[in-house]
Image 1: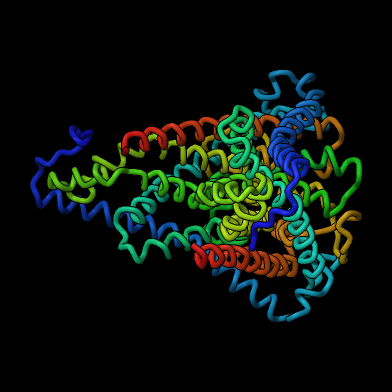
Image 2 (image 1 turned 120 degrees about the horizontal axis):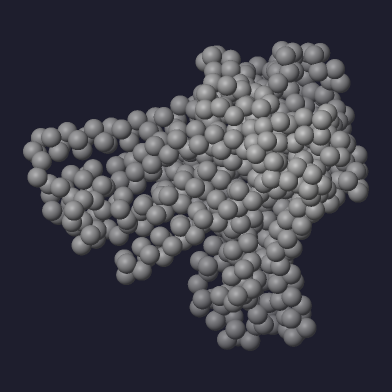
Amino acid sequence: MIVGPLLDLRGKPSWRGARNIAMQVIMGLAVIAILIPLVAVVWSVVSRGAGVVLHAFPEFFTAEIPVVSRRAGPGMGPAILGTLLVTGGATLIAVPLGILGAVYLHEYGGTSAFAKLVRFLATVMTGVPSIVMGLFVYLTWTMRFGYSAFGGALALACLMLPVVIGSTEQMLRLVPANLREAAYALGASKSRTILTIVLPAALPGIVSGSLLAIARAAGETAPLLFALGAATAYNPNLFAGANTALSLQIFGNATSSFVAAQDRAWGAALTLMLLAFLITLTARLLFTRRS
Amino acid sequence: MLLDLRGRSAHGDRAFRWIAIGAGALVLLILGMVALVMVDRARPVLGEMGLSFFSSKRWSSADGMYGALPFLWGTLFTAAIAVAIAVPVSLGVALFVTQVAPRWLKKPMVYVIDLLAVVPSVVFGLWGVLVLSQHFGLGRSFLTAGIILGIMITPIITSLSREVIETTPPSEKEAALALGATRWEMIRASVLPHSKGGLVGAVMLGLGRAMGETIAAALVIGSALGQVTVNPFASGNSMPAVIANEWGEADDMHKSALIALAVTLFVITIAVNLIATAIVQRSMRHSRGKST
């Protein structure tokens, strides 16, 4: 047993007991230390954001953003629409591709050299800073096709893809092999087995993992900085024209010296945080209900 | 009911296989393109500045001088502060959740900590710039940025550490307890030595995250030029923050310089992540092999 030299039981029992309690108290303090910023941030956002949102309810969610930022008044409608467009677009791109990629890794590739390379690069890709992805999409897409919500969606999709691949592969690993064997024994082809047996069995986990990736993507700012341009009016067109998003509005208004702009930033922060929490909560409920 | 054998076709089967392979290969394609496009665009500035891009302190688009040392320093300094703050807290929380907390408390605690990971980085930035830096007299500085980044990476390090710690075989813990060890002595003798490698990896993954974080740093670091100092209360700048703040007004050469910053950031974060992943995987494999 490796316990040997690290376990020194020679001290006085009272001293050892005291140290035991002291260390556990320190761990408890760490828990309090992690809760302080969470409570502080949530408190600031709720207390300052709720006033702004409720003062002009429901116009805050529907009205357009004031063009002159020092002017008081509601309006995050276009940013809410922009966030939904960008995140929705990214989801439509990244989730199907990510699931397919994971299907390749787990059902076809296995331990082959190419599958190992893809798995390895997917891990590498999760570490790419979001601003680098934003710049990449600007250079390859936005410079040619102009500002659009779709550019933002592409950047977010690049960030989501490896996350969806990773979480989906984990879920596929949980599907028992005898389900696949039963399907093969009945004469089903491999693709049919995957589509009608394996994926449905893993579905709650896949949806939950994807929702967590979506929640993270909805709050991203850096990848949207270069792709969306700036807008204060509604732009429901995914593929053309400058757009805006809640995160961009928070970023832009945070450093403003005008109280009206800061207020809108807090309101947008509350909206964005509620959106992210809601998606996360849905993911958790989905997963715990079935497993 | 779900199993319909009528649509069997070898063509469809093969096509699906290739679609799946294509989706997997997409990862390779995207990463390759990111590297190629970025390096290509960074070449003008790297060609002109050479190695002084990394060693010069002067960053001035008017003179065409692009020395990134202060931003490199800012990235490393703030990330170091963040790790110094996050590591003790994360380790304490992970040990508390896995070794000390009663069973019923475990799940709610994990949920609450994960909530912290869901708060968007721009919201932390907003809080940092309007609350932390104003009401606590910290101003916009390396320290403020380090604190915000530390808060942001704590949940990641905590959850990774928790996973690593939970791989400790019960037999080793029970052996220590059977010898009469207190709970802390058991942690010190069995849990920590067992998880050491994985914990180092978890911290490095947090470090990589802190270095790449853009928006929160851009809001609270103060955007000062030429700062290479260990004074945590000084304003400074970090690589991702410079890119975010200066891109809008940049001309061609300036943009190339910003892309060169992005390439540098890309290389550093990937190196840190690779080392971290290797350490985590090796220690996981190691421990799994031993426990069976």
